[in-house]
Length: 471
Image 1 (tube, rainbow, N blue to C red):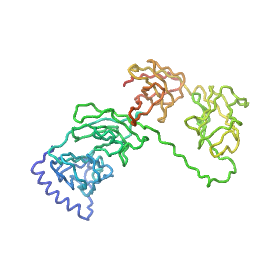
Image 2: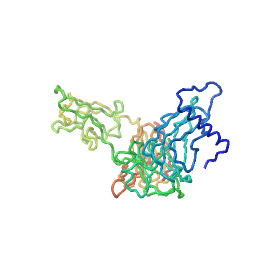
Image 3: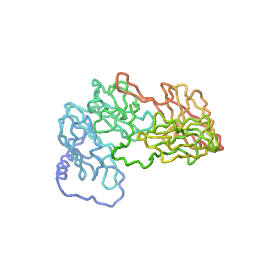
Image 4: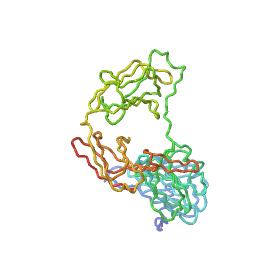
């Protein structure tokens, strides 16, 4: 408990009376300007009830600071633990804040009011970081703590908009039906911290900070701890990995047939994924349309040489996952010209729209000088479950390599810098798999970790890299 001297107690009484007058007054007082720059944030000088008060059931709380303050989204930043049914009303004026509580408070319970970074001084904007006010309706303050970190399982990134919630362990379905007893936000490093918790058993979850604070949609980011946790029992910091149980469906513009104009010609359009005007040697060519399409077998698309001779070994298919995309696969050779012949009637969408005219794409593949080899030496892979090294650019996986030995030789990579990720492929199917919390068989997601060293592929250079892989 935080102790106050007699002089401080007298200051509280004097300040509380004046604070009430200030809050009820109408005048706006402008703080003086000038003097040396203030680099210190405001600090608490008095409160009613006092901070860390015991045996109180306040309907109104007043807190005062040593200088004039201003607030930023204070209603959104405030977290009251345990949660209340009704959001407290907050007034901030001059150097004080008034909080009015309409709920009936629970007996023998420690309440904390966390203001985050919502309070700062008027002149310099110095923030009171993580300001918290505490009181108890019983005879003691709860002192339980819980800390941990949350990462996104699919890419190892941090999403600081997520919250961590606690539900009583005996309520197995509470995460689906009830608002949490306790919740807290993540900081910019993905770290969370609970304080002033009772020493009870809880289930721990991660959710978006939305209105319901329930797991009512499998497309929400979500994480769970495999077993309940007893607050107060010695335990290392907890690691959680958030996942989407199901991906959100692509929102496509609905088409009302009554509003369709009379067909004066085809309206199908597509984009090509050339690098400039050149085709990458290591990937298929993709043609992407605005809507799902299908082929007209009577007018096939053909990959040919510059004399329009059809090339054997080419594969032209509609992507099974993205039905709006055509995939053209071929063992591309460097610095070679190609034609892709697309007849007008070769493609239609569900509304029977087709191309405005026949088209011939003329392109050339990249030169060998646009690529170079790489050697990566790795230690620690033996302790990992089916590790896969992923090379990414712009948060997209460009290349994946299963790690089966300490030496990985890559004969050809496009020049440029790659970020590295490590996928722990538990089921050894070559891709990342999400988790599930529905049904009896709850499943944690597979984990992806960012590796701190980038891979930079340069021309005319022996590109080598040493990695230490940890669990």
